[in-house]
Length: 217
Image (cartoon, rainbow, N blue to C red):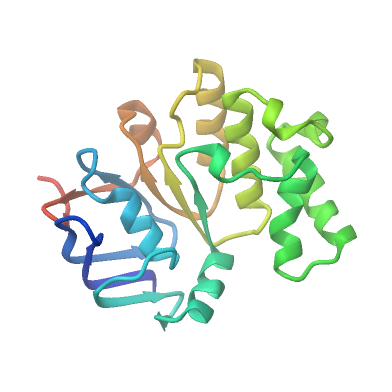
C-alpha cells in the first residue's frame, strides 16, 4: 500500500498559470524520495497539497489508505505526515522551545504532562536537552531548524516532507541534521538543491517539470 498516491493533480493559483498539470505520484513505506525541479516549478505547492493546506482543482489524493478531500480528512493526514517548512520561523510560534515541541502532541490529544514528556524525549534524541527553556526567537538559524524538526518528530509521523532542510545551515549543523535523518525510519520526500545531502539520503529522485512528475533519465 502506498502512503501517498496522487492521480491527475491539477493546480493553479488564482493569478497565475497552472503549477501542476496532471501530476501523478506515489510514495511507499521506507522510501526517501528527492523531489527536484527549478525554482517556482511547484515543489512546495505539491507538499502543501499533500497535507491539505491547498486543494487541487482536479485529481485525487489518497493518503494512508483512504481518499482525502475534506478538511476533516486532511486533519488526520497532518497527524501522520510531518511537514518541515522551508522557513523555520513559519513553524515556530511559541515563546519557548519546550512549548513549541509540545504543541503538536497536545493538539493530538495528549495531556500537558504527556506532551511535555514527549517533547523532552524528542529534544534529547536530537541532542537538544539544554534547549527546553530557551527563547525560540533568539535561537540561531541552525538551532531553529533542529527545533522545527523536533516539533515535527514529536508528533510521531509516518512520513516526513522536508522543504529545503539544509538551507542556511553551517557545515557542522548540516552534518548533524544529515546524520539525524539517516537514522530515522520514516518515509521521506525531500526538496533540496544540496546535491551531497540528497546523495546521502535519497533512495530515488523524481523531477517536477511542466507540472508533472517523472523519474529523471
